[in-house]
Image (cartoon, rainbow, N blue to C red; front, side, top):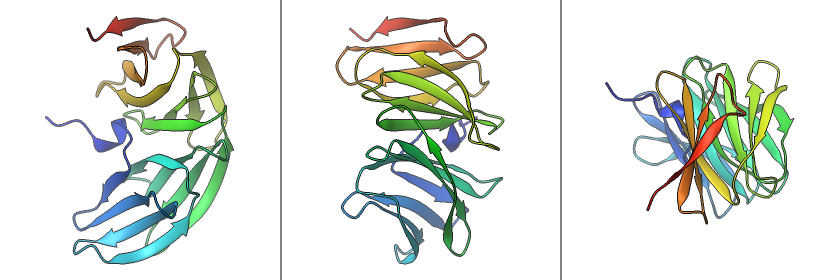
Length: 173
């Protein structure tokens, strides 16, 4: 069985069977595109938008805005509308939703943290320190573990989500 797409962030996500959400790196826009690639909606996020995840049940995307230190929550329909902005530690980058879609995990580059946010309120649930230069985050399909990549360490960090302060660095060598 394939893992749900919302368990790890990307610059693109499918929306239903015939659309996609894309971060346009040049403009910083979040763009909803039809199957033929035609833009159908556009929303300015900022030139440093990095990753997004899309929750198909809620019809909501969560976009990391690195320059403004925030997550931008976007309602996805015929139009794209901002429904929330959550402050994060410095330079949010990677995002992933837990399998129950109730918690958003966010890596922050300069602050070197992994933070968890309640998607209903945007409130921070917890935060833990990470190795230098954290980037992507992915969650196991059973929701027990998150893996965070690092740009410079040659390892990944494995975090047990039941006890997020516990975890281990795993060498990729």
